[in-house]
Amino acid sequence: MLEHHIQKNIVYTLAFSDGMRFGELKPDDLENKAFDYHLKKVIKAGLVEKTSEGLYALTSEGKRVGKGALKKQTRMIDRAYSTLLLAIRRSSDGAWLLMRRKSQPLIGLTGFMNASPVAGEKIVETAAQICREQTGLAGEFVVHGGGYFRVYREGSLESFIHFTLLVCNDIQGELHQNSSLAEYYWDMHPDWSAPEMLPNTQTLRKMLEAPAGCFEDQTFDI
Image (cartoon, rainbow, N blue to C red):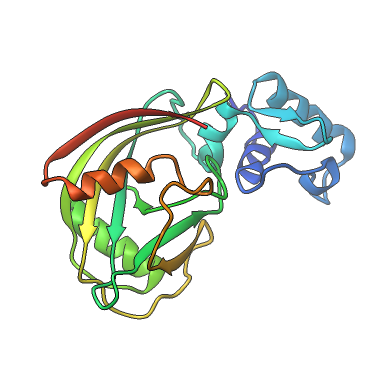
């Protein structure tokens, strides 16, 4: 799909933006003609489009490739990617730890922290480790439920995940910002239906109120 490292870098760079101009996207050490050639290639592949404002941005398909564009193996963009969703609450005041996304897909939206499962590790251990690395917070996680979420934007699939929902109600420590992909913050009274929230947050909140072992398979349009 992506034949050249310049094309991969174009898609990867746009994964952290809602849109960039040609001069912002082009590396300083690359001639305009050469860069334009590769830019047209990723546009033809359906991964990048030029908006009415004159910006280059990822298409829905491009967003699903996103920051995985630099991986050596070709990603299967229509498969569901396994994700750990971490519902973390501070026991002292009931505040929720929320995450604002800094990369595509769904850049700028807010929801629960996420992590990728690791082969050879129990997911509760992975959740605790990623939480500690990215936020400085420590706690024990338990599995609460799982399922599938699909998110469509204007009729095109933008995100498809197979998720496991884990919960930690005994988090300890002081919050630090150690991730370039997300901004973390405490919120005592989140508005789960706010437009800046990820569309799955209301469903996840209902799952947290249900007994452990719950399963959801839902599709959202934004």
